[in-house]
Image 1 (cartoon, helix red, strand yellow):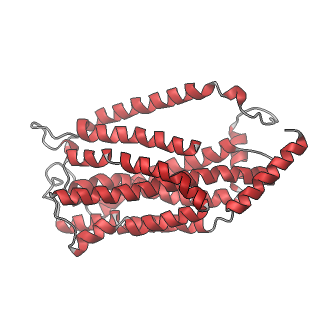
Image 2 (spheres, one colour; image 1 turned 90 degrees about the vertical axis):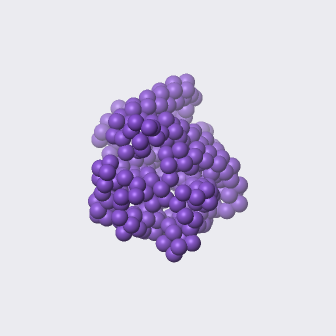
Length: 335
């Protein structure tokens, strides 16, 4: 449940930045025209996002600091932190098969997310030709799948094994994700500039993002399950190490995905500059390549992630056995 709340709060922060960006910082103006193509707007958005992120870090740190004395104390054989000890803990954690499989899925999913973050703006601007306010509406509408995913992840995890639920949700996302692009390619999608197109993309995004949120929550929950498995195997409980390894690698690979998204734009020869890149001036062949990369192309990343999660061996029954064995061990030790 705590993992779900962490995702809920994190997504709310991201949505506040997105909606503010499109409605305030990138809003169309009479003097500069399309706010998305004005480089002067980006530093202001960056400053706003930086202040919001820093505030969130400080508030969350202050709010949880008082809980530290009540946390379970681990045996320490030396300094509480050192680079050498971190490397040793990380290597020990990566010997856990479950963590390696979950990490593999997270890496490819984070890379796909990084690419999608870059190409998403290009798709909305040039492929679908939405205005800044329309993109802002799409961003704000993500509150719906956020609440939907948050509300359904509990019943889904209780009804099905977490691993099976993630596999099912991932298969749905893989099949559902490229549908609007495929519809445009075969000529059955609504025309650009019509209300029907905005409704289509919004409805498509509700289901896709809800599935992605549930996958993320369940994957994070399974990482915590892997810490139980690691404790049973090694006698050490390293939630901090497991979370830091998965979080750091996910952020790093997501950043690489941003870089890769820029490389892909160069590969398809997407134009630069306010004139050449203006909506209506980009060649149709280039826009088609953009759609193929951002739609069906991203499926390759998710298929790689799906491969890893299918190799995860620990399920609901095995985790129940692990928690029972740990409880018995603690009772025997008087803890």
